[in-house]
Image 1 (cartoon, rainbow, N blue to C red):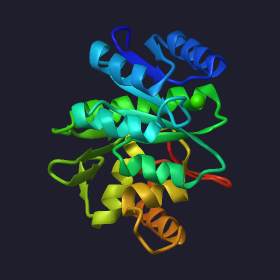
Image 2 (cartoon, helix red, strand yellow):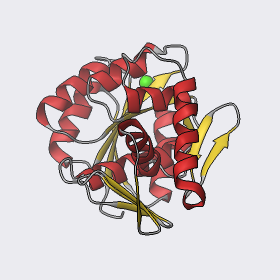
Image 3 (cartoon, helix red, strand yellow):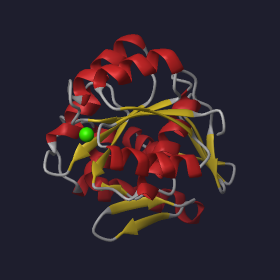
Image 4 (cartoon, rainbow, N blue to C red):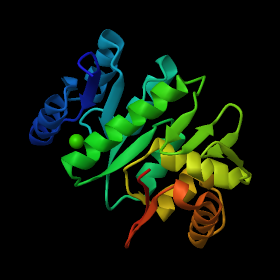
Length: 224
Ligand code: CA
């Protein structure tokens, strides 16, 4: 992690130094930029492993920065969105951001997301994805196979995608809405009950091999 540089694009000094302090405590190197143009310049110069990008910036908004960064690289991007602007996250993800965190947030949540996005992108290699394993479960994205205690388990396409997403975000509480967006896509017309039905199927098919916790009032968390 010592060689992992994170570029933080945020003009509010208090928030920036607060976030940076937490990331450095976790062993990341942090480079800061206080405007969109500075951020784009710094991304080119320091080739960060990940960018944390605020939407409200003095010269151009975070969406524009995201769009321009995407023209030059596939660096993982986490956007900081405001709670009262629910469409921000959708726009951000459509522009190629990897994840978003809603302000105000717990620094621990941001750190967990940073690690999760890095893990996801590293595993993906933005190309090859190796098998994931947890406890007695192995999921191979390339072969589209799941084994529980060395026995193959038959999952439907969506069950597989859901389990894959949960495993990539192991330890994080994921809302039903987020799971719908990430696994089914934004234009999916169904409701969040769909998620519950698929989670129940996974629990039934995988039994004791998986622990998918229900997080009351939020959604689900894969814990192994
Ligand atoms: Ca800002």
